[in-house]
Amino acid sequence: MWQKIKRSIDYINNKIPADPSFGVILGSGLSAFADEFEIQHTVPFKNIPHFPEAGVEGHEGSLLFTQFKGKNLVIMKGRLHYYEGKTMEELTYPVRVMKFLGIHTLLLSNAAGGLNPEFSTGDLMIIRDHINLMPNPLIGEHHEELGPRFPDMSGAYDGDLIRKAEMYASQKGIGIKKGCYIGVTGPTYETPAEYAYLRIIGGDAVGMSTVPEVIVARQMGVRCFGVSVITDMGVPGKIEYLTHKMVQSAAEKAEPDLAYIFKELLSD
Image: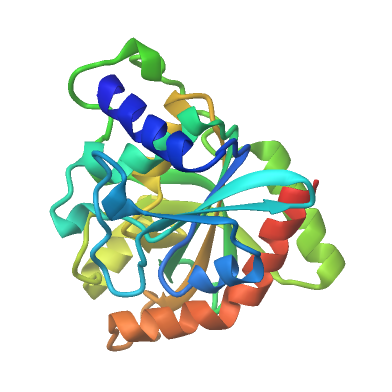
């Protein structure tokens, strides 16, 4: 894998002077965040050696390179998912590449179903912890260059970034929740019984991404901050028929508040 990563990095560095310190991964319906920046360079996934292509509606596959308040960042516009048939190595490969391009901090967003009865559609939930119900992306051959065989996950989501995000949200009057995100394979949305089970085991929100990326990032020592946009409710009495377009639409409405928090963290 290390040789593949080096080839991907060499390709990008030969095309552009990439030296990002922050990485951003955008979830369903949240790609408008990238439109708020003057993008200096766009590198399509399909052009990068060994880089998997995105294949889900609402996920354009490109790495976008820009600056914000003197800091270089790379935005992953388009996310890879296990349910597409991607292997765990493939869907986390972009995080590996971003790390070795130079990032030390990764901001992630996702659209998620709410499990906590105190939540409402449109809420932003800062992820304080997760439960992984997907295959672990570190299963398989170990590569020392990528970090320890048994990485500690007790602080998967950076406490300092969480505190700062809460402060920025409060200053702006943005209501914010905190909770535990459960990562599942998808691609079906949950049955009422599954929603109940996920709540019983400790979940506040459920989605089909984020967790593998965070595991890989933490193995490599990258700080992580994640936010879920609650796009529907999996609570008895509030469960409704759901489509991907409905999820995208609900996420788009919450995007301005998410963009504000991300920008504040990037400018700190």
